[in-house]
Length: 223
Image 1: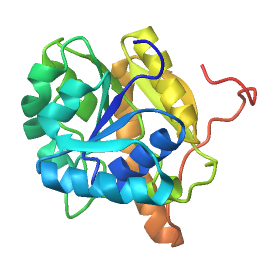
Image 2 (image 1 turned 90 degrees about the vertical axis):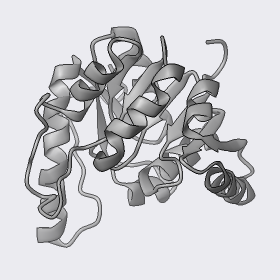
Image 3 (image 1 turned 180 degrees about the vertical axis):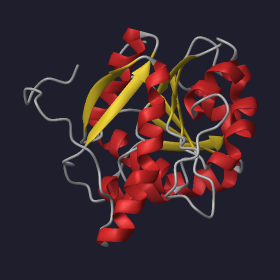
């Protein structure tokens, strides 16, 4: 990759996906929104470009993944398997950032992890080594990202490829959060489970977007 990598946001018309896409486009990254409907993705891209003059485009999921250097999965858990199977031919050798949390309705504030241990580990198994799977962005809310302001929230980044983790930490920093190296992909279980805990905290304390902060790190230390 030369210059800033192109980022495909699969689920880019949803709340989290669109918020991340706007942040990265504003930071100078080329962004492709991915959706099951190309027309829907193109319409969302036009709206975003009208708001901030960013160079965002829209495609169907497979085409978006094919055009990108980094592919971010920001879809509901119910669509996780279908999306991974759909884009698998286009992600060989690429970084796939899995932001999916295994929330199971109706009790989304109760931790319920999948048989593989986490959504990220399931993605790694399903992609069968074709991609460099990293997980991140589980514990930062779409409303905070939509605010346009810097966010007092850390993003834990997990992956078995240290170089890929470092790239995704840079993306977290570019999105106005602080990326923190959380270690191997197996550790993603902790962040995915914590999402349900944070949802419960939001409800009990009547707040919107409780997040996490790792204390004890120097202010400038990202990884």
